[in-house]
Length: 391
Image (cartoon, rainbow, N blue to C red; front, side, top):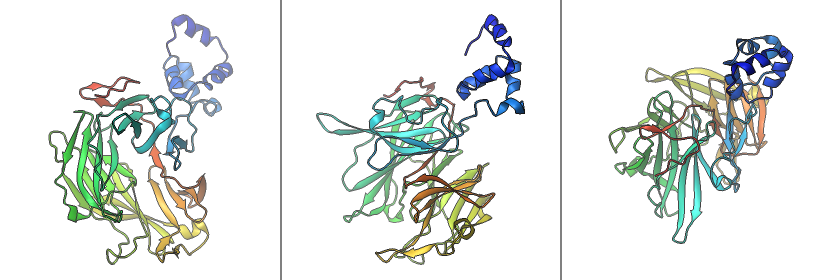
């Protein structure tokens, strides 16, 4: 928003109430630019009488996609002010995209297109806040008997480049997952896929579609048996280092036991967190990883929150399960997002008050989305806004 001196003088002749009324109608990003034009306009955001009327920053929320739907939906405490396109309508073929993953303001989608030769699956990384996007070079075809799961990794405080990790899982004849046999990694710095096929199948590593974090160049992802897989983002090697970290809390007595108390990772202020229900489901325990050891930080009563004491049930197939799941742990905002299986809805648990608030009906795979106004880079140059940048 550019104003010349004549326009600024004219605007300064308006009453404060009228200026605030006008400013209240603009998106938050435009309001930030307006505050740079006039010290008087800047002072409005500090005035208790006016600040509640002025645009608020879009703090983000959750992205999800209904089963058998191609539309991407946003739900959160603060409405989108229009400056962030969480529906991804700026992308070509946005009506037929599959939401794959989300990390620190970037979104990973898949587009299935049919040609005269074969069906082609393309991956797209985009930033809903800046409308920047790139179509990636096509990875290797997915052979029969294998399942791929992709994780997007981006940390603007560590690097302007992003990474994608595609975990290649070998499947059993019955459809179960045996373990990871290889990892394909894409770096926006080199715009190239690298393949690491040195993974040992006997390790039985299974990387499900659950929340992960990318901190200081290391991807932290939960495995199906509630361990943490750590993978270093590479710079000059095709074989990034990886290792397994143990987690506290409940563990099955044998691999044949049903594992019904899955936990969830969280992150805040340089500390990795892990939350898991206790064996009776009445309490959620939150641990923090400090100096290489997991220490209990908080214990939250689900009995008080739900108003009942029975949470562990037996399903019709004879398997035990907890009637709620931890979906998201947001330590910075002090909330835990919980799926209530009994009511079939998503709830927000306040760490401060110990109360539950309904967020959304039904169950979906929810992904944390927080807007990022930093432009990611492709190679040594920044990708242009609205440009595919694909190779």
